[in-house]
Image (tube, rainbow, N blue to C red):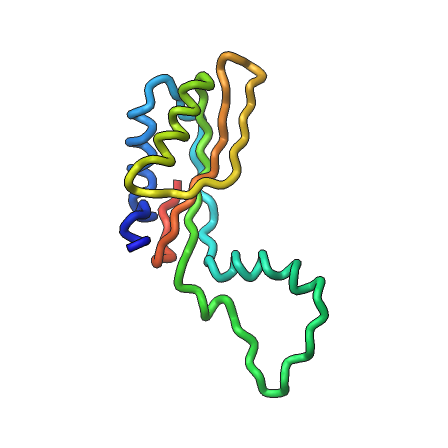
Length: 137
């Protein structure tokens, strides 16, 4: 059910393009695909600093260590998109992005308003997929 509600990785380019065309007043400044990451690797990396802070017992002899590469079955695909427009149009873009029936997740958001009223926004957008294959910009 979750997978059906997410934008498929292979359709991300077309989906982002259609979303941008619907938002008049925005100019695409850049679009960059990010490396595919296994969700299990991301979870393990986030847990590593916490685990390092706590003492752990040595593994029992003969016990196998879990390997994230073997556990990988879910992947995060990311795109960094840079848009230029006025503040109102950029906020409307984010609102639309959050309320569409097909979902994506967004991460880092940077805004540069030095040339106001023109504002440049860089946004990282992610989708989750069972497929490791990814499109490249």
